[in-house]
Length: 214
Image 1: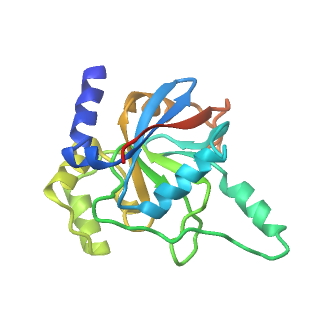
Image 2: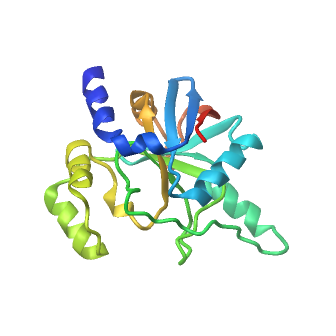
């Protein structure tokens, strides 16, 4: 099993990934997994780094878990809606999307959550990781035609070999990916949840930056 996961990580972690400067460690009771942030999605990268500096993710929760789909953490949709509903100025702060052909919803991708806003803008303090599901060649081809996407050979191989969530591409911003400890994330994705996808036991995490190459 561990050999299989290592193979997946090696397939995901391409040579271009080494150029990304910011690397993070997510600490959980299940273990540690490591992530790098994409420099080609700078607004989301910098927002997340500021959130770490201001302790937004010092004692956060993975609060929505759907096996074969995503592990979501940070501020929950329900809490965001409640907070914004009582705001006298009715502000709904969001971050404009950053779609890049190099950022896609492969296994281990880090994305920014959002609501149904037409601009596809991201919540400020909600993230998710793709744990995905198997994808067929026919499904990918249909999505390309529907969304006007042309996947590279490498991207197609990643989806077909390891799965993911390509239907989210160009609808949610992807701004990083797991490069070590993928098995930890997959273990978290299998915990028992209630009918609203809340884990039956709270899963805390905190994030720290472990590398910053200038």
